[in-house]
Length: 233
Image (cartoon, rainbow, N blue to C red):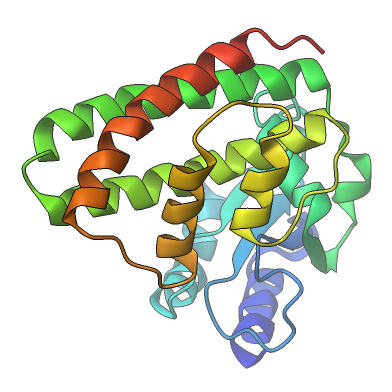
């Protein structure tokens, strides 16, 4: 944890009393011995260009150590974003660790209306992006594999939110998330489970499977969007 400890000390030195909280979130949030790939939320009392300039050097070192760039926001931004970032805040609430300062996660409240609305919005954006990538990359198996990896990653985020809308516990494994979500949405479980195993469990698919999946994915995204649009909470 040396990298994280050093990073926190640098932020404290740079921001002083302006630093309210540092929150780890995501799959690595509760892994004590993680050395990289740790998502962090940095919350300050106020935030201006000078603050960003002051912490830019330690953040660059943090990112150079193979960590994602932290999310930096003021306390006012934190409390005003529960609606537009309902999916993200749901994820943080379920999987986080307070690294430093105030436990702001206890204040998170998720309105199911906004959670469903963001699911719909994310699905529409995903469908549009998939169609565009399909048009540009359909002749490249390598690129389409990348596209499908990104699609399943985003779908799993949305599926976790769907389960929370129904007050269901969210499983850890991707294939279990897909199985549980199938209780509420109709889609091709075989295709989505295959994609999840390819991305997260080192499974592979052949050329014929890829062609089939490319076609089925378009139909599934269209169908899932229509079903989520019809949900009411």
